[in-house]
Image (cartoon, rainbow, N blue to C red; front, side, top):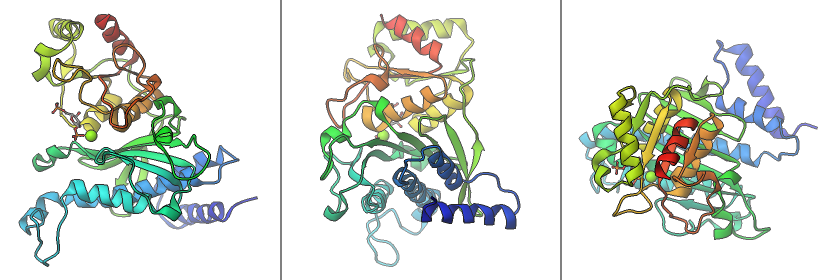
Length: 345
Ligand code: AHM
Ligand code: MG
């Protein structure tokens, strides 16, 4: 028996293929097709993903006018219309909370930008899922026109009812039911996985749709690049220094570091290579956050045939102990990450 949502989407797909030029698969169609492989599904996860895509289209629009906004004074406190204007960080956080927080499919929401659980409107805290997100990672790069990104992670709740708790939010990465990122670069791309491969969609601004451009992404076997901030070389663990020294001595792998996680991981996923954010003397757990950054990238890279590690164990097996826990991250081609683990031992 088809639900109203199924019928609506089916009619929409038929309309698109009959009456328009061939545009391929839209993100909406892809999510719906994935949902059909789970006959028990009630469509909540699909709707969550649709909402995330909508929010990211709005963020993409705002990021694209970040430079021009300055001309009109929009990065100041007050704009030309006398309205208070938010910085992009705040804007992206607020739009996520306003839209996802009211969608009815979540029982808890947590953001890299907020210390505790985000307050949801009470009557809506009844969904089966929890979501953790970083609304605009790498935002310090915006003024130099460097690509930035949104990162999201979705789990099924473990508590039975009522508002979601820390227990629902602090699950190991291998329990993620969906994860992804959106990169705002030379084009805007939505890259996601529900544990059934990694798919990439590019936003066609002329029709406002994400279209499937990267089907079932698999990491190339060759290690093309290594990516790390070598500022910290002298305070890295000895094993990492030796690993990087060896790479340089061999001279076969190029150095590439953007300093914007989504962009660095996107390149690593498509071109092959390894990304490192090690522990340092000052930051023994590195810089990146387990629940908002590392787990999502680990899930995607693993789905594409790679591996992610904290140096000792698979990132996805770590049981979180804090919402904003940091973790050293070594991620990329499987064999290369294993090599790094060997160096660290
Ligand atoms: P943010 O979450 O405060 O934006 O910081 C995370 C960013 C990542 O995008 C990037 O990988 C890392 O910080 C770069 O750090 P560094 O400047 O130390 O190389
Ligand atoms: Mg971040």
